[in-house]
Image 1: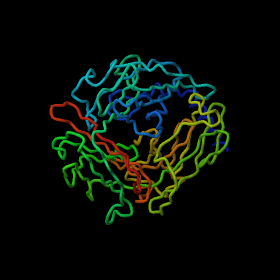
Image 2: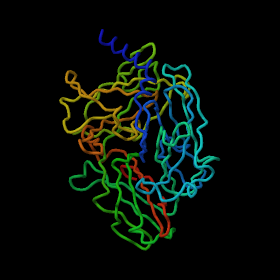
Image 3: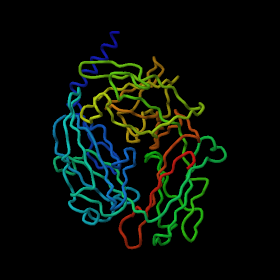
Image 4: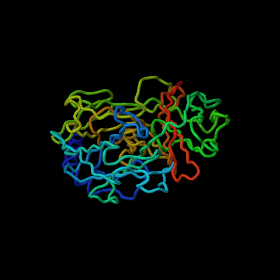
Length: 429
């Protein structure tokens, strides 16, 4: 009991001094052309298409579609944040064109939509940006890096997010099927064809770049695919190798939308004067186990407070304690919480550490009230690709969402157009 009170006291103290500690720690401002948070005091970053909360950060060119960025600043005061966009090629490197070529209106703008948290233990300022807008519009299709920075200084980075704008110049028809041979019970193949009859594509087999991503992940995306067959109207990608993903497993979840009642997969509340803790039910490894079907959101999460009308500024931040049973420590890599809540990356803030006495990996994440899906990833030493199957297992029956992007650079054009996009649902389509 004494240990429990001590843990709660430490939790309270960490909350009281959290903004200062986060400010002091900081992170490097070196620009990264990927989804990244550059300051520890920035939390709950989400970007999606308006009207499609779990969408990839993608809109159609000149369609009226808009994207919405939300984030919290735990410093709790107003800071002047600005943003701009950088056009990138299919490999997420800066394009050889100027902002005057790809941005309409201004080249940068301020984020003016903000509100202060109300009646929360953790004070924070909630910021929201909707774009394109009357001040900034994207004029070309392709990849864009959204940059958010403070004090009108583009080098004082806060957030970067990958954004895509597409044109419907080609039609993509895709489906998922089981792997073959030894991969039949664990893998999913994505086969598709690209109909170029409506587009003036020259040397399509060499000039098109195709990217396939799974559930919004970037670390295990498939690139560089070559068509198996070329026809008058398009390209057929129906190979047995190169287009294969681990099926994985359905995502685990916990419901923290209420702090009055225990939700799904919550074992215990620990109430403190200035902070709350949630102990999740102990998890077990699933590798080697049977597949069980249940509905999930393919690793997404939803900020929601059903105790207070789901207002973004009324939701509390909570310390969430994770427990993963494991007979012994994994020596070939590190273990992380993984999903959209971690930007599909193995981040230091979400690393778990092995406890010999409890025979479990344990870790704590500071999360805003909501519904969260997650899995446990093992990042092998020296690798940049997280393995979910090591702990979670892999099954061909698992539901996943795949996104297919088709890029094209015409002769004499200095940027990659995104001329096609489609979604493939597994299993079957």
